[in-house]
Length: 273
Image (tube, rainbow, N blue to C red; front, side, top):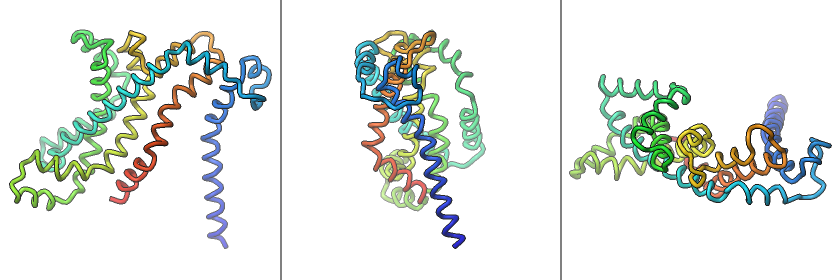
């Protein structure tokens, strides 16, 4: 009886927490279909009708689709580069355990502990001298460098758990280090890559500081910068804020819905391993 009560209480708690987390999202979506006058008069009321004028205004003045394409291109490129370079760097660190590799791993851990705002000024100065400001390669390199410490630390732990016998069997077939990594180790990193890609995608898509700092041409803005430019920071109107917020997060939600099964299976496989 006690176990049943505890189980019911636990399930009810999960439902309550989930609803509390989804409440702001639901409120944002509902308010996006109301006019400013309606929101000012009754801030918590449900919309009487689905007013689409807010979305029409946002799509017309926000340069939305270009921002989405920019964000998709940058996010996908950074995710691929981080997964590839991070796994390549982590493989020798996980297999060659000595003072040097332990020192490198310590430096990587320190990179994880460095606050992002500390790197803003050095990155801006370096990129200015290299001519990488206001360019797609510049923003991709910046995001890749910022996420590589996480990838290296993450993959190092994962590769350390892979049996060495698999690699030894490959070496008996005259496979070199690169072949062992590419054909033996890399395919086994699928669960780790799925989990890592989730974190990197969220970080890059939602980041506001570095695109604002490194990009100046409107045609190169990410969707978050397009939202910021549209909404402004002085006189924020709810009929502009809510639809812009929905449009800014919608593509990412669509991507996760499309790849939901693959992401969940990857994370689950990583947990089981």
